[in-house]
Image (cartoon, rainbow, N blue to C red; front, side, top):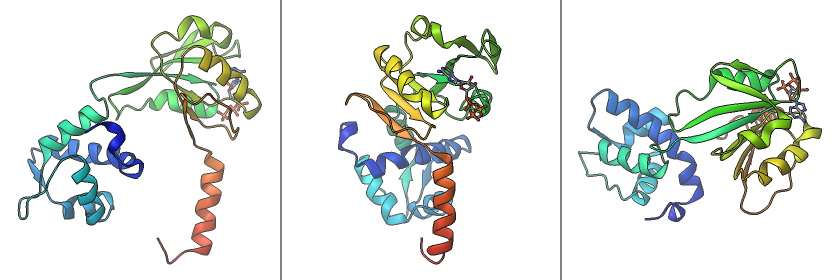
Length: 210
Ligand code: ATP
């Protein structure tokens, strides 16, 4: 089965499944039922069974799912063995927090370089990540596929154009800017203030529904 034959909603749950199964495996568990999984990750059991059937994992009644089989599948599908190198642009408050956090729970994605335009911020390391001047970006992007954008909104499009010209194919955009990109570049927007407002709106209007 190719990656593309998994529905997008299922693919989004893959990292969640992977993290939980990895923990189970570290605890020495060899099998898990959809009910246990469901209680732990708060996804309903029917959804889990349907998702797992896409992975070719068929649960047996009274036995559950084989943890190692699933882990192997997730490792391959999520490219766990291959490190995806990430650059972060904009070492402000949010950017600095990401550099310090640096996704230590994911062993396949890592911020390896950061860029800023402020002279005060460059030529030092935050966590273990070197910060370079944005004017030198073209010199430093070899092997980097993904960029995280934590610059002011007004700067986002120009930086994006440079990143795309350097071969970046994935962008995690934390600015509110709606960016124009060629089709081969994948972008995910995370606008934290919109998320927070939408949470409060849903709390006030749909408090009894999920
Ligand atoms: P944050 O929004 O991350 O909390 P902040 O409020 O500290 O950040 P911002 O003004 O949003 O600061 O800028 C974020 C960072 O982006 C700053 O470190 C700034 O120097 C940097 N920056 C601004 N414009 C550019 C640019 N064109 N290229 C690279 N870095 C930039």
